[in-house]
Image (cartoon, rainbow, N blue to C red):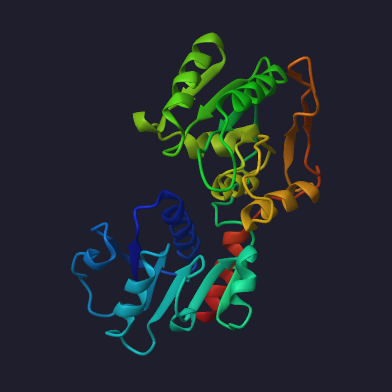
Length: 304
């Protein structure tokens, strides 16, 4: 199967396409051409010339990729399918297949070309957790949640106090503020069992630690990080962060996970004399590992 993958240089988008293609490759021989979009302004965006004239599938995630999926298909054979990962912002009927999260269902309810999944697509791991390893994953500022360095650090400190003998790996991201990175470096220096894994140092251990860790503490600003954690064995907990908007699809999706006990969370409780009384609320112990990418790949295999 010849595939053209249009990439928008957004790590979160590209991760989801990659895990889906990896899953499809288990039952199909895939020949993948990758083309990254160049140029920042819409009128000047372009990709390098493609090697093959015809493809079976053209795929991409993110609004920058969608015009390419539509326009390139016009020069393809009839059997070529363009697949949009996540929800296109225009002419949704121009796509053969859309793979979108359930929280976007109101935007897509009139269409019959949609495969829905929960949250985001993430690699499924059945690796048994190492009880000596725990993990913290830090996102950054976005439009959904307030990012307060001190509030987050206090919860990391509390999390470590519950796991005094385990090795803790703290990962930041591209969106993590510089102020927080400095505090994490200082935090590592004061805590002997703590390893700060800065993405700027091209640390590639994130996935390995993600799959090995027995407990993971995650900021709630990243749906991708949340579902990467839920797609592994072990316990997942959300850091307390104040909502910027109450009626918001991302905030609502996170709150639904909490209310259904699909994920644990830090309850900061009431503040007494300037101190917050924290408590770690666990997820349902009978929850199964999320396997959304396997479900989507199964549906695609029937359509391709």
